[in-house]
Length: 285
Image (cartoon, rainbow, N blue to C red; front, top):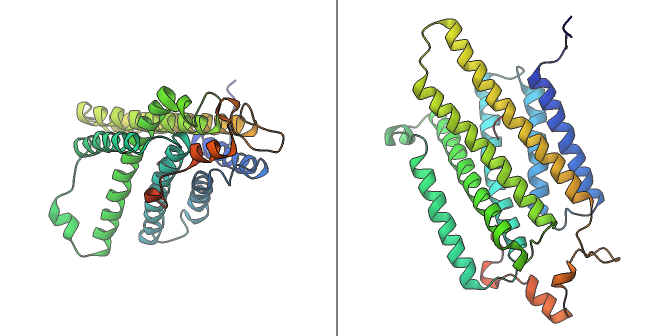
């Protein structure tokens, strides 16, 4: 006999994702991590709200209105994800010389810009200039997709830099910043892999029958579900690492690693961000 489950894989993954996000928010609030990572915390809140909105509004609003809500969420999520990357970079490399910041930032943006330009189609100029509500939604969706890809590439680059040089600054082994950076890069690698695999399938597979078409669609759904499993695993990773204090945390609650502690003046110098850069600043369901 085969067990008969009342819920689909999509429903189960949605429930696990939403529950893990709520637990992560409890950890961020209860362990006082929100003050250290406000943009990261806000992104988790927004993603949880986005998932909840999909269930509450799905099938209850006209398609045009529903599409407008979801695309607006996608644009806002992309902007917030970019802010998260900047926040983690600032935390990871606090105290780095200005020249190092400028050089690595330019290199990262050049690589990300190249990937953004060559990966995926670009719409015709006439489509972008069209004056209609549907054309505006298409433009907003295109911006969200390209910004998501930009954030993914930057997240991967940031993860590699944190692993390679984070210990010299503020993202040493077992630090919260390193854990968040590794999680962001893992999610980015998983989603870009899904997109790349689907593009290969779209170019090489040409279904001739309805059954062939359904098999291709089912394969695409399995890829998306696999990406969701990776995201859930990353949420669990963040929950575990952010629950525990960083090595060398003092009894008063500060989380400065022992190897980086110094006098008050030196500690202030290590955590200072260049004044001219003050105020600078992911998923498909």
